[in-house]
Image (cartoon, rainbow, N blue to C red; front, side, top):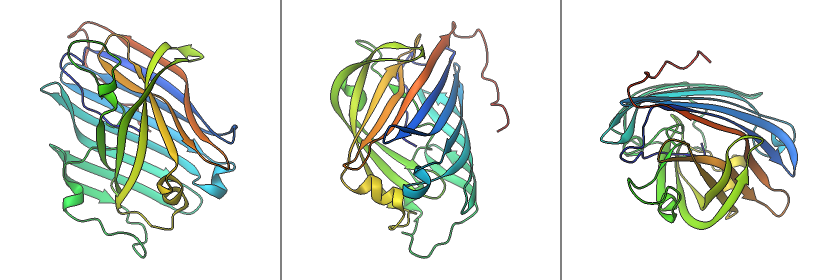
Length: 268
């Protein structure tokens, strides 16, 4: 959930992004993420799988998850219509199916976690939001440079079916990255601050870890053939150990508009 989207004009030539990420804590591999984004003239799909464990089990979170979102592209912007997730850990299983309409939750089926100690989710918390996967693409201006400071100047209002939180971004610097497979080149780096709003348990280790004024940043790389950016690296700096999520594969393919249609994601 370190990502959100607003596609600019002409940003959605048909294409695909295949990415995989390593998760490390204190330089020790603790998990991985794979993600696929398929976009066309009028619709898009995103699917992802994630796994974390090892030392993360003690400090933050452990388990496996699968996520899928689907939506339409209206006036150059992606509008999510459905979001599903399933997370399985040693302590609980979470299933979410969410139907959205113009940024508001219209239907929600979610196995509710224990409510004791959690901040209540209100009706207002389910409006003007984006799902965690449509948090995967960042738009650039219709003209001008693809990588610019403007990509970082935004707040991402995210609701995952249980928790509502903001990711506040600001421009930090320009940098360069190299994936083992795929992209090598410049990125724009944004500082990130996490603000829990509702649905969270105040004593949850991950919420405390992200809310404790830690230095966080996200590096965005361009998706070839489009005016879209996607996260290449996310890091959380800690006095004890750093948490880093970084792409080892970041491969994009594109084709002329109208050459294909967006396919349903494979069942997770």
